[in-house]
Image 1 (cartoon, helix red, strand yellow):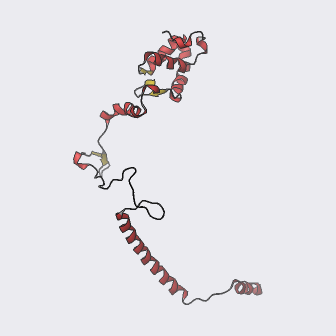
Image 2 (cartoon, one colour):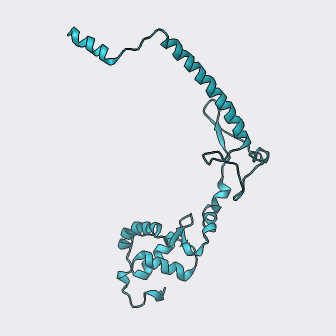
Length: 193
């Protein structure tokens, strides 16, 4: 394989990851890691012993270098080939067929399959707020719904009821007590010694 961008450079001074980038750029195809490794080794004239020693570092360099992207199943390509939005789809597309049905444990500890029906979809809220819509906010800048107001009203009433009980208990406990200064108490202890 001829790589024009490395003309005039010594092959033993080239990094394997740079050669891999040049190979992928020239072929323009997603390539299996092992095939890419062989092509890089052939271009750099690396023998099997040296290749085995450098193989792990090469894989690490591919993962770290932002120019490359792993597409699953040990396939590699250049990140520049893919629009940002399509990268996630490309990576996860193969997993769509492998999705498992949800499982739950029965009382004996064994897994039971749960049938999922299309009718079991989660109900969406009727009042969906879109970006840019005006919404009501409270004095703290937190968005408020009508339902929130009702819930808060009940909550505040409950808190007031709780507060009344606490005050009554405190009044009952204080009724038979008198206030004593610290100096009076400390002065008595000093005299006893």
